[in-house]
Length: 252
Image (cartoon, rainbow, N blue to C red; front, side):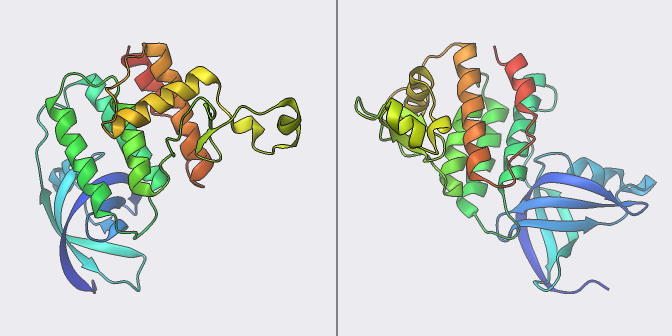
């Protein structure tokens, strides 16, 4: 028997796994409750195909759920689309970006930590992805803004005296001398000067202090990889990331 108070919330589907013969367990990032696990019964039966369409990556739902804080698994009473994105499903590049955003969130969020600002930001990015045709810098922009909402945003203190970005410290620092390199346990986390400059440029543009940098595909790819490594350093569960490999192929 299902128990708990009924609550209406919007949600973004992040991940699903099979559960029993006909059900699934869905990880859903909700606006009111944060990341939650829901059992969705009967979805893999012949009569559950409509529900299956609602459980695609980053499906934006309006849900009525049973919320029982004493239980790890919750149940969805009702669900329906909260928004329709008409131009994503049939566009291979947009779908690659969608899967990238989904994987970033799935590997970043913790259970039941409410983050309404991040939720609203992601919904805005889905709307932007649906409507825009220029999105070569969108993955980098998404990582920088999501880091801000997660509380791990890098400090943009770039200067001539502190020009190198340290992934571990999350800030720009002076170039290590031969002596400090030998004694600094964070030496291996320093990026080179060009990579550091590119990260500074994107950080500055994300706050409106400068225009979006005009980097070529190779430079954007390197910057994206460096920011993913930054996430890996600062988030314990952020590893085995794969969706960016497709982006490197399609975002030329």
